[in-house]
Image (cartoon, rainbow, N blue to C red; front, top):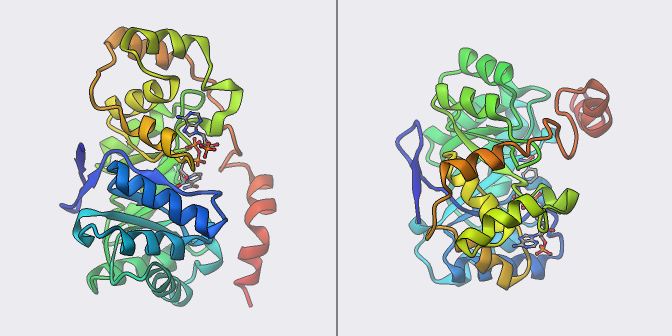
Length: 286
Ligand code: NAP
């Protein structure tokens, strides 16, 4: 496994396993067990995914030493106040059945980010979280957080795939010494990504699938990547990306596929923010 060094001195595996949209808990537990069995040592969950307990069970039953597994979870916006964030951290720990998390992220850049971040800083001091970070933060939001807080985020987890490459955001994170982590590296299969001919032609040269080429392209960009699958054969396939290297021409060809547009929703669009997060944020006013 390849590791990256975080700005707080901790190390993080560069390839991990995500469990978004695996709401069936026995399926989530099985998928994480399979991933650990295959060799993944980074698991990415979130309070909002509703499967922290299943992730914790798989970790507990794996027999792997706790300090060999890098566990990430995330705080949802309905807990973005100082007090609620403290509770949210304890809830995540309890559901995971762990006494510390390796990385805990503010899932979104909305609401009382300052209050929630202060709770993360304190939990880090108390040893409940090793590294603290953010997700879906644009460069100005990241800068704002850096300027107003004592601890710089170690990680910014953002959407990065061949269709939405985010070169400027990744460069900004790097300049700030904040590790970029890519969510939805396969754009959840949109635009037939697994059969795209340009990617397939690159893969043929190395005897690799489209998924493997995509993960390799992200790894060579210095990004941490967390593909999701509930099929063991794909979990294995997605892990088998450390025995080849894309040439600089192939990296350039991959870079040419950018559609410059989120494949899900624009995190800076006020209407999207209101419709997706409005109810949770308004509820926090009371
Ligand atoms: P993804 O990893 O881009 O795509 C997952 C989809 O690809 C699933 O439908 C999976 O199907 C399929 N797949 C996986 N490997 C494959 C392969 N080798 N060949 C063919 N199909 C394959 O999408 P994601 O789950 O949204 O993103 C990954 C992780 O990022 C999440 O699980 C989560 O941990 C994190 N995430 C974070 C945020 C955030 O806001 N911070 C947002 C989204 C996701 P099967 O499962 O049926 O195999």
